Each structure stands twice: as structure tokens, then as C-alpha cells.
Length: 90
Image 1 (cartoon, one colour):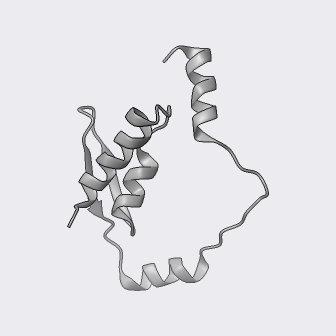
Image 2 (spheres, helix red, strand yellow; image 1 turned 30 degrees about the horizontal axis):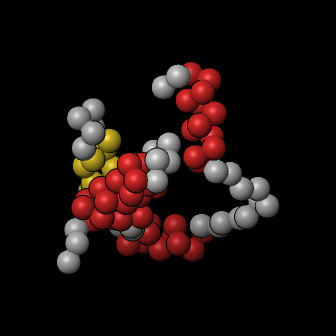
């Protein structure tokens, strides 16, 4: 069995190191852990994850009232970060 932190690390390695995509790590980390989770992105490049402490009633209210919309627009994180890197140099 693979743990969430190892899955996130491998996903980042594949996208950033092997595929050379200029992306951040947030999406991979959120996908690896799933659920309603809090994350602390530390200066030493580690991530601390812990479950959000909310009541079941609040969770059910969130589920009942959460709406997702597709606006018809999409974006490529890689393209956006490439533009940023070219403009800023970081």
C-alpha cells in the first residue's frame, strides 16, 4: 500500500522532473490526500496534512449547498507558469 505523502511525492516527481512541467505541487497533494484536509506548506519543502475539524452537521451542510459550475473556460497551469517564468525569471 502506498501512503498519501509518497503518492503526492511521486506525482510531483513525474510531472516536474520527468515531464519537465513547470507546475506547483498543490493539486497533486490535494488529490493524494483527498477529503476535507488542511495543508501547511513548509519552508523546508515538506507538507503537513491534517483533517479539518468540523462537525458532521457542517459537513452535510457543505455537501448540500456546494455548487460546481463549468464556465466554458479552461486553462493550462503549465502555460501560465511558463509565461510567469519568462516574465519574472523565477
